[in-house]
Length: 419
Image 1 (cartoon, rainbow, N blue to C red):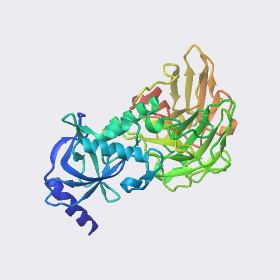
Image 2: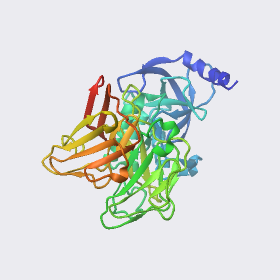
Image 3: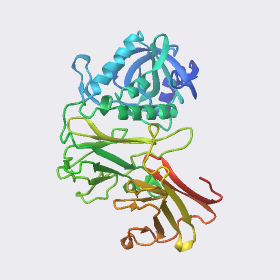
Image 4: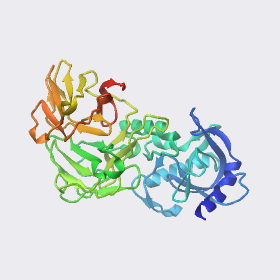
């Protein structure tokens, strides 16, 4: 009965839909397209509209594809309240709608795409007589987070790129003191997200984690009442004892693993962060650290689509020995100076090896990671992956050294596989 109700609401509009670009102003995939009159702007990513030509005057609630504005807590137009930047995003959308004389263009890859009874659509307004995508404007100005989608994926590449540009420029949400001066304002922080858990992600939420690094070599940063969130509404609030030491880090485990001192369990029963896909869907995700005032103090959006550089590019070589219990992977420094592998990951899907502090290689030196063995037996240049049996496929496999933002730095392949 629920499906029948949805179909009854959507199919009249679908039948009258035209076809056009999924994201107004951008070439690429085409979508079903409708014209609608805006009845109200509810917040920075939601509006109510009357779709023209659907045979009704019914109001339909639209959720902007790819856009996650900060949440409002009060919605009455004259008394709007919410998280920092929430009301500003709403008012920006209202101005765009007024400029477009209340008329918007909606598009969807799938007319049945919904989120909490709201139709997921890209939304465009008329600017200088041309349809201009609202999400593109919000992403470019840093007024919202990127909300990647498997079903409505046409915005993934463009919005993922635009939010990384906004982060680099410190615009909107990413102005580190745009909501006022928060605690430890001079201490720079960085996030590392392990978005690909060992094995099947859905059965291993504890395989996902976020590491918060304090780049200040002198001052600790107390994170009590700060919160970490993904591109959705899932949020972790740090307890009072969470402190990142100078030059150190702490970890938030998405599952239940942790000691509440250096590793804090989020306690979720399912993974949070979407894996990267190298296909038309172009999936990715992001993590964001907010201080108690509401400033985004650190973030990591992946895969990298803007200013994708890393200090190890051209500095490392990779080789593999896929021979039974003696199988291993070797990383060699081919640069003129020392390199640090800390903050990088070795992947042979679905397995991964994470380099930690102290992973420094002198020029010409090599580090061997033996697949089978106990990491307790590690030395500076001889590491153990920690498996009890081989994992590399003798007939053909691939191993890559990457950043957590999915920049490939070196690759080794053999047999029927290639880099």
